[in-house]
Image (cartoon, rainbow, N blue to C red; front, side):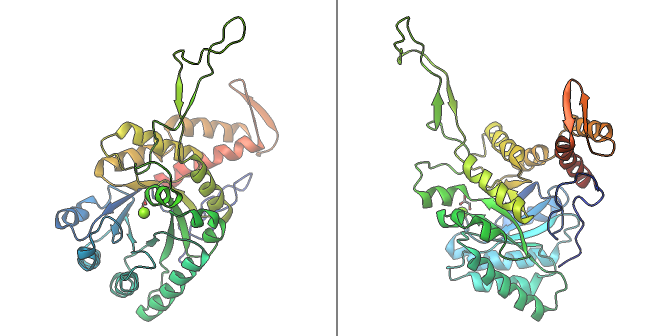
Length: 343
Ligand code: GLV
Ligand code: MG
């Protein structure tokens, strides 16, 4: 494996279990671009340093006629760009498509030294990761690469969700998991045509008022609360990723114009444990960078708790609230994330 920085190394007392031997480089926004689109491709070098991850997309959203141009476009961009602090990822075509073998062969052979992570779509089980893992190992050896390319799976089939734990643990290359809400909705036969986000029909309604006889007035005006369609899947992803020491990510939010709802969805994912999300438009980069960085106030509070807890054991009262060994661990998650992002 490439040399890794232990995410929680300096925290001897009460630190959460270290993430596996994968680099803890920030990846709050994974910005997608189509390398076959000359206008988009031309902007890539200017985006270096403004976003944590630039991802050359070869799969869905690239027309079948443009698949070869996208692959070659990514090779050209990778060769001619110094990515500095920004990571370069790619999303290859699906494993049952006619393009994927050439995607991997060409990219690893030509620009494997520049490529940090390969995102694999529509992963169904550990066998898909094993296939990519073995292929990468052969191609890396042939190209004389010294740094392994990591693998990121998109969760976008019901079978993938059922096999989530084995997918996360399928290879030491596994870096993380993203939600693929559009494909997953279709595979599950969900009745939403939106790409990520909520749905106005998925709600719960406040209880009806009742008269003195206890009869409910169901026609009365009542508040409704929209629920999060993706809560279950994100929560499963977070647990599976935490168990295997890899990183969970939200995924695409297709309503580019609705920056407010986008921010809400990203924040829900952040609060539940995700470390980042996809960006489909430059304006989503700023939202992701903001949401997936802990707030100054939260970090300041977390540092106060760490200081107040001394050797990390026992209980203290701070601002009328009880803090103990467990809440210290929560605070350390926040402090370490802030430190990592500041590096
Ligand atoms: C992303 O690939 C999705 O299907 O939502
Ligand atoms: Mg998809």
